Length: 245
Image 1 (tube, rainbow, N blue to C red):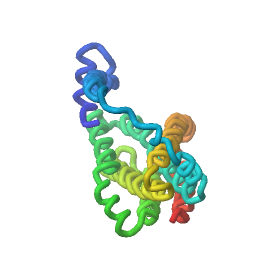
Image 2 (cartoon, helix red, strand yellow; image 1 turned 180 degrees about the horizontal axis):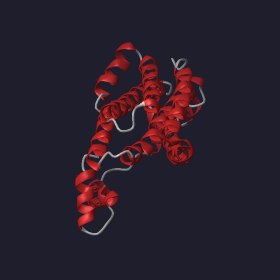
Image 3 (cartoon, one colour; image 1 turned 60 degrees about the horizontal axis):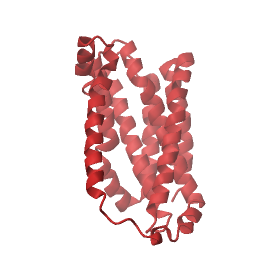
Image 4 (cartoon, rainbow, N blue to C red; image 1 turned 90 degrees about the vertical axis):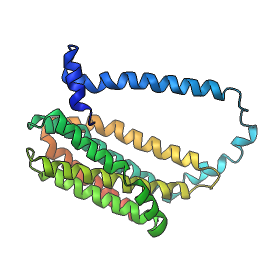
């Protein structure tokens, strides 16, 4: 996101809209990454394929996914993704509409991403020390606070805007780390991938629904309405996370 400003300048220089700048920069990066993965795939081609025993016991994790703690963990993951994606789908446009330049918008999004991932070692350590459920509950409470702040923050004031976006990222991180730990703990230790996959699918579906949904809400009620909807979802997540231990 910090390349939003320079990317816009590059896009304008080659006759494209400034908002296309990140795509201009991202496309060659994905090509390089694809080439690296292709090279790695060729290097791994001679490795032995997993034996038939790799699928043994598949029924155990499938049965575990039907347990109530798993459902509550998935609900927390889905709600956290819905709140974060819904707000962040609109926040950059909202900032730009209120006079913030691409450079500031990119910095705000970067700060948000830092909150999403930079605290993972700390939240992971806390999940081990004080319990994954406690971390998940703290995360959804922070999400609730961030959504409420977003509904009232002055649109033209950069500092509080960046502050609540950072808070949103921190809340998402704690909710996801805590709920993910609870989820994988609910299935047999030698079959965590199925639970992790269920969590990723839940978060992906929530994002796919709430990104466009936030646009529809914003078109009728503005950014404050998006944040108000996020407050409701966060409150439901608080109720779900309070019972996932």
